[in-house]
Image (cartoon, rainbow, N blue to C red):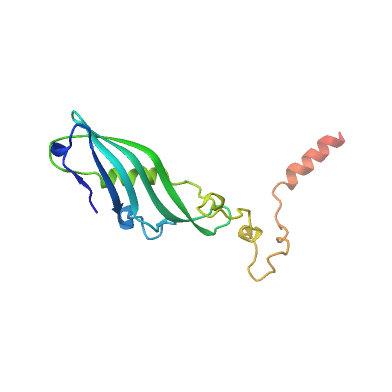
Length: 166
């Protein structure tokens, strides 16, 4: 999973590189909600300016994500049409630029993915069944929550009522 660029062989006008890097390049933890479902695609121009490489072009990768509203799984393609990456050259040895391309995609991933922004937009509405955390699972999900037995605000409410009556 490397994409080596030899800075000593880059012509003045730059060199074009296009292809794919396997989805495993993302190396997300197994418990992560985001799952890559396509390779990272790249179509870039690599140019050298003194001790710096400039990568410009397009990147894309598709992920399966979980909607923060509906908890439904959906796919979303992260597409960068005008990426520009500057890399400082520490020496003249060949350089692996795969991690830099990966980072650009990861940075653009949504923090709060929504299924209405996926590749195939879905209706993104709250499902009331997702908010039943305080209910007894043996009860009907549509029954009202149990009434509270302890009302810690009763004393303050009584004071307020007494003050209102004065």
